[in-house]
Length: 561
Image (cartoon, rainbow, N blue to C red; front, side):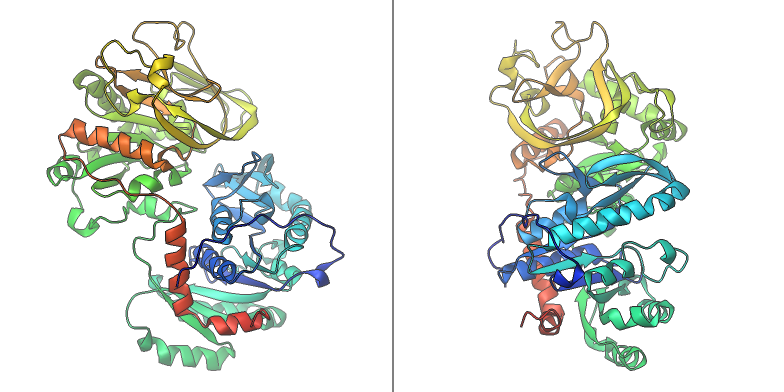
């Protein structure tokens, strides 16, 4: 049963003599990527915290497209931020000391303890690995020093024999932490028993001894049908099955690597019944159609999570202009390589479709085009990369907002809050000009974080206070610093706008007002908005895992019974 949400503060940093002083630890490793390790780790963190234990999550090295900015302006993996929330703790970069953010097929930005240390290709990072391992050990000892128990997460599979020599996240980390290992297999994709048996075969004898049990994840159907296979694998390996976790439908928790986004899945909608439905057909059924281009280098697609859990709304992922349909709104998401993604939009015809949509929205006073972070940069006239942080050179934007962006060496990492102009969510009263102080006064509060190298400014003569019908500040922080710019139609409603703020749509009041205005545009009946919060979903996840696993065996292993 769900208990009260845990709350607390991270353990204080203190000196630790060595690994012998470390608390008991359990590590979840998988037979493959996307086996569900991150959510199972969050569930176990929640269960342990609900028992009143001081529990912390840890993942030595994470490779992820989406990241999180802590309150002290540092960067870490979103999965560990979610796991921290499950523990009732603020996110702490020690929970994920090494973060790799891919910028190409062969290179990543390397972030250590929340700070970028450089762009590295594979060979350069392998040479850097000893330094990364030192940072991992320091972070773990510091974090674990005040904890009763640590729940660690591995990465990919511990049996990737071509990578084991450089491992710092799977068995090497388990050995350092003295952690018991639970091996997780995704039965939904098939081959789970072969994957478990094969993984055990490829591990060394010492590594096999560290594996304490197996978990089957994402099962659909009657788990009793699995009993013969479970018993056979236990006889072959000597390892017990701790349980079978069912597939949890419509779990509204942030994803780390946008798997559901890439599949075009919107929780709460019957996708089978809507397959192939374009925006016009969706509107006929009372469904708001929000189109998102599937950028090859998309980043922080979690910006869409709060939208995707709303009733009567579909987030539709589009990869080519032929599938454009008749959307009510278009959102350009973040990007790890804005120039390359702009070229993708042009090559697929999506750029022309976006420009036509924006111009039509302004003329007909219906529809909204919004850009977030990299999407904001794309809406401008030009993006300059003189330092070669992404590709170098200069790339023309869509030229829908009179803005120019320059990528700079310093990376902006900060939590932000402010107010959004009413022009984003309603037609302004006659005579009220968006961007003036009055238009920002009973506006919706917004909060989120910025994470970017770009510096975006209005073109000369296009400043928001220059007068006339041009560019306007549509969002500002409490000190008046612009957080977003836009262009308004003749009625004073912002039809093309952008902001660097990630997490913008997480605020219930702003999201509800934004969607209500879109429904009014489309002639759709108003709907009550959903509340977006992690607590109830974390408890639902934890309750399911508690009912599915042999928790007494796990607690006993950790000496917690």
